[in-house]
Amino acid sequence: MAQVQVFNQEGRRTSKLELADSVFGITPNANAMHLAVVSYLANQRQGTQSTLTRSEVSGGGAKPWRQKGTGRARQGSIRSPQWTHGGIALGPKPRKYKVNLNKKVKRLAMKSALSSKVAADEMIVINKIELEEIKTKAVVEMLAKLKAAKKALIVTENADEKIYKSARNIEGVKVTTVNTLNVYDILNCDSFIVLKDAAKKIEEVYA
Image (cartoon, rainbow, N blue to C red):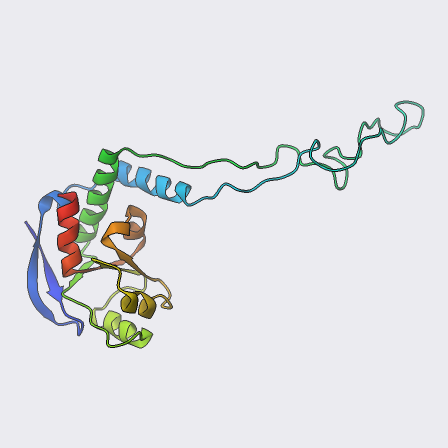
């Protein structure tokens, strides 16, 4: 089983934690991770953009001038795409960008992302985070003591308002829970900071 060092808030080593190889020690599957990232980003899109075609723009019922004899190009409507205030040709319309993945690929992608962070030595396990009050400075100091990178993801077992509100104003830092953890956020961070209880919960979910 893979072993990682456990730190406290002060950045001091306290113990070691054994991680299941079935979750944190597999050979990362790049294709599965790519599909998971594409699916995540596509599913973030609302797809509500819409433009008006020539049939939806008001006006333009009458032919602007007769077909022949004026010396000008023939025109059928002042709401054609080439006219100012005309309709849009081939513009975007509401659509769904959703990309579905089956459960096996999702699980494989998650395990691959977790394993890649352990292999790259970018996973930091911390025994607990205790904050007396909502204070950004406390989290900044903790990250500095842990020697975390600028882009960091903090994973807690359950939603913690003090941690979330203390870290939300720090550029590059994101706080999430085990239930909302996703492949994109894991791969997008340079320091994967996981509370000890959260690491055990991840093992239970994906083992």
